[in-house]
Image (tube, rainbow, N blue to C red; front, side, top):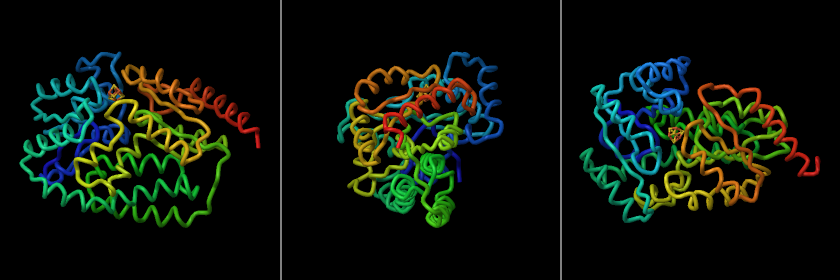
Amino acid sequence: MRNIGITTTVPVEVLLAAGYRVVDLNNVFISSAVYAEDIERAERDGFPRSSCAWIKGMYGACLRYGINEIVGVLEGDCSNTEALLEVLKRKGIKTYDFSYPSNHTVENVTAEINKFMDIFGVTAEQVEGVRKNLQQLRQYAREIDELTYIADKANGFENHLYQVSLSDFNGETEQYLKLLKNKITEISQRAPKSHSIRLGYIGVPPMTCDLYDFVEAFDARVVYNEVQREFAFPRSIAAETIYHQYYDYTYPYNLKFRLEEIRQQSKVRKLDGIIHYTQAFCYRAIEDIVIKQELDLPVLTIEGDKSNRLDSRTKLRLEAFLDMLWDLKGGV
Ligand code: SF4
């Protein structure tokens, strides 16, 4: 089976129907013990210091992992992807692109997915067949999410990990299905552990995954991981077709659409506050201005760069934020 790298969530059903093993380069980068070397390699090869660590990491991970084909999202994700694809092309890597249309209509999403299917020579029937086979996996990811915000059994990191990995199913759908099933059994048997402060995490997935354990030490838990949950497509079961599924995916479209889902989930999950993670040198940090104006909940914005650990300043800010939320709740 041939590997194909992706730079973010794309209609993975198309790639699986075409017989590929899908590898999310973000996951290959951040889960590696040598993640810092991926960044260093990119900088040695000329990536500016003032470019985002995820882009540099994906570049390094792509070369380290020996990926020969890659799909990048040119519209709706990252403004740096086009340049990344150009550089990788010069290294002999075959590149394909996909776009989430900025004019967000079902017709436009349909046209983009049809184009994508044509590139890989697969039919809508084949893709729907794969989509159907993935439903159990998506259902399991929903159960892990519910074990977090309803049952108080899964922790914030587990919620993050087992949803974010649905971008590529760790490269093996059958094995990932088994892994999720076993995890659900294990987590379900735990005693519930409720926390006084319920947090939402929004923005790109963090470089600094220790933030989940950090907040739990202060009687707080992340019970909503916005983008990771979107990667898992929790509403796909109700989507009529693949076109509707990718239309109803909030992250790559306009901020207004994204905020509607964040507001709704904030109510359903009874959130006390939100952590907005931004990545140094990422254009999405500017969205913070609108997010803070539009959400009724207290929002703390934190920024990560190259390290996969929280720095002491961010820890202090998180602690002060949790203190403030505790006070707002009346300290009871
Ligand atoms: S964090 Fe921002 S700049 Fe970096 S890859 Fe993601 S969208 Fe692009």
